[in-house]
Length: 166
Image (cartoon, rainbow, N blue to C red):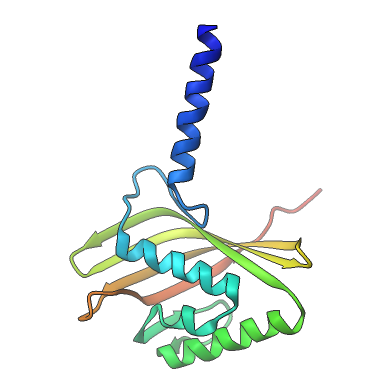
């Protein structure tokens, strides 16, 4: 009986820990929460779920640098907005929707500047059925503006190729 109680207690406590972390943002061991930066990821994920490019673009500084794979560096929130508008329009036109989640492995924040290193997982859906999953790695630099809001100043990412199947 004591074993059953102990196992139940462990399961309950571990589920509390898991639910304490947002499933769209997982902070690995040693990575501390930061309300301002964590809010960026929460809003980023909401922008992907709702396919609202303005929501995502406004998470960047006015003069941000956006480094996507295989493309030129985009400098400015306006250029980032154009990129997300094209991307989200394509998703809408194909009757798909998507989610994105983030796993942070490294974070350092000092005063008004911080960075994260992590992995993102992007899932595409159609009619409630998952079509595909893509993973990539990223590095972002976040800055705290005069308005006290944290935004991305630099965002660079690339795909993680799935392992080859034999």
